[in-house]
Image 1 (cartoon, rainbow, N blue to C red):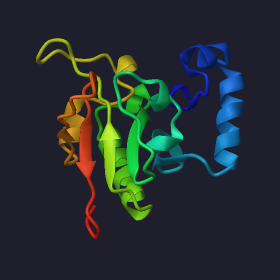
Image 2: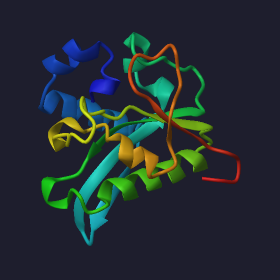
Image 3: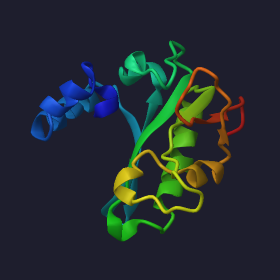
Length: 164
């Protein structure tokens, strides 16, 4: 919900818990949320948030990631995979499904903002990797973007008509 909070991080923190859940539920009911869910049988084992970049107010305030007014520019903002399911390919399957969703919805590109370890080879604690890690995106045909306006690492995948 942080990416969607109209007032930024301070507004999000004021609504932690139930208030953010209610706000998110209203967005879902209004059809303003895109994402994918993963199940093992009937058990939910993960989700990914994706959507047009312009639908996330975070980017209007960000100094490290440029905003976009084009509805065809999409982004991945968050993953959740329970600890028992991590390391089993759930995030990869979710990202692949998210790419298909974006493509079928007319996206021309997808950006992602993975957590990059400070030192090469360092393992990132899962609790801090909710935006994913570079290897996840690289394995799904995303490439590190060269964007002089961004001070944060951005991975991007361009989608071509007829290909996902």
